[in-house]
Length: 362
Image (tube, rainbow, N blue to C red):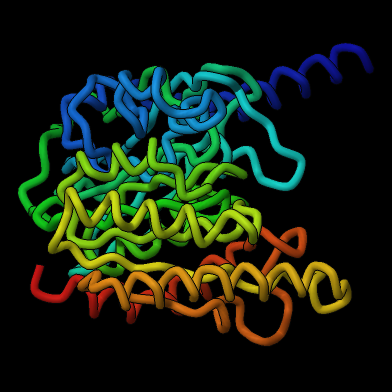
């Protein structure tokens, strides 16, 4: 009798579970390359930041990092109630101080009024291939979207899924597509380390706030004022060029390399505003005198390069000091160096007025 009762209860439970279980909505997938790709200056059919020819001209580590999709995003519109993504990364990268979503996940934003509002993230699987539903049970209204790609891994393939019967197409509004980009050459922080998700990289925050794409040439540990990267910058059609390479460059190299890089860019882009950015103060520098000495030596060398270039007659050259990027509570980093999301927001807020001023009217 007891066994029959238990069997009956089990059957009832399974029946109830089946009633409440939600069958996943089947999605129809579309190659993301069918839609505008922003944050990439070349036209190759990939999600790399540099075109293929640079594999032979930049250092191997820079080339490998250039295949990370930092700053690249997809613009589209849809009336879907369900939106998903299916993607394959190049390396299945993992970092011990950065979330998997920031490294190799995706971030979806919707245009609400005239601002981009976070919808949800596509959290990656622990493998090269991932498939995630990002929006569930939406209202089916037509909306414009932007999907930010991984910060510290490359994308081999990407498809955007919508529920059957929904339409997905190229955007009607030109936001993030109708202005010349800012080209930002820098370090791991510019690349997006260590934002918890792609949309929180300060360069992506700034892109949304300025409604202007940013070509992210941040190379983790390897933003070093290199003229090989300068060749790529010369191929872009920017509204502004930012050089933020102090963090990765030894003090004794900064002056010579900065001068050479600016002269190279001025020869190919004589009219474009060019902004030199000092390194900020690492948190442990407040307790390690040798690190603080290096911080100030680097700043002094960049300032000397700036002064010498101005004296030589270089026009439309601008400078941003290293104070004020992280606030004053010392709580903006994950490891004393790389910003948390709080630090990323502070970075963006600090640099935004300068970028807005220098791109006004463009």
